[in-house]
Length: 218
Length: 198
Image (cartoon, rainbow over all chains, first blue to last red; front, side, top):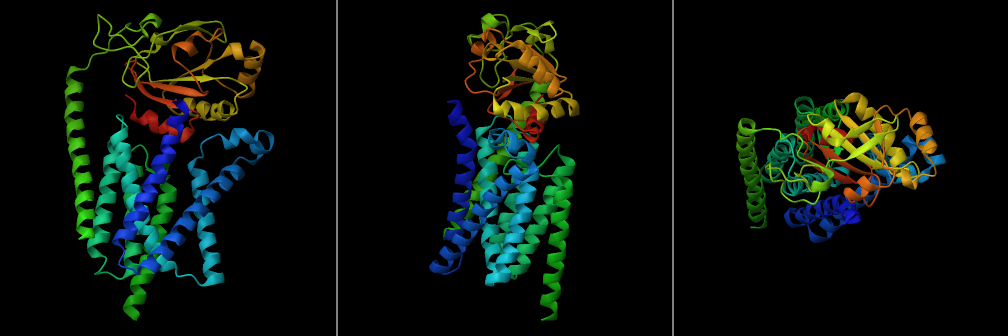
């Protein structure tokens, strides 16, 4: 029973991403083969993220790991490992782009779909399964709902790059507001610090500004 | 067509969340008006989960139940009861020095104890330790300033049906169980649970 309860959060996380991937497959206007290719790239990105998260967890506790490896491995990772995994994933994507000339825009578009639907599913499941949840869950679910509707209804009317960056900027700004107003905010259970969300928001604004300027000049 | 179906499902899920929020807000407003704290209702003998005859609260190990009371000695030799801490948010943690996740959890518990207005009762499964001195040395090494209780014959661990360690019970200030955690909690998880406790 106890070990089962430890597995439940992992199962919820995995099924949320599966639902995100399925919904991308159903809703994407791309050709079947291209959808599959994009999904493979998004799954590979997620797998890399998990690996980087574990590397981050070990690197951030390297002294303890060398003396008591189980102590680190058996302990849940903190958001610092999450931040490091985000950084390493960004470096990974940058290197991949440099070496293989991958289409980052397509990859981010797929990731945007999967992330939004997976987050919405994950937070909804948390609302159902836990009795004691605070107002934060409802507010974050509301933010995700608005962003999903934004993507679904405006996708055909906005340039893909502008859509990706504007959703990213709105999400980071919404999360930043939640981190200020509420006691905490999380992404898939990992607490996000205001400085990290501010950084994401600034990156989003800069990318959005560049995207709009490029469109205006072309 | 597919898109319309997905939109309907998502709107339905969100509508349910809004409805749930409205219901919860109403219940919260009602409970604020009628709320009373039952004092001295839980004893170790009541831990069977039966309704207490004099109160409306149920003693047991499920979320929402009143946590069963117990009496243990601290490392300093002081006798404490769980019911002494009514009115405070309590983290009741079952641990041992030989358990790797427990060792990893202790620094975060100490930080949690220092940062938040929370009482931590760390129940050591003393019969599984080689000696009591091991516990004393561990407490000194890790600079633990919260209460360490000695469960010398694992009576309380049995009462709380502890299987894996660490296991934590997060107990609201009215003595009810807010949540149970099997396995280690990190600092951020403790903070998240603390903010939801009342």
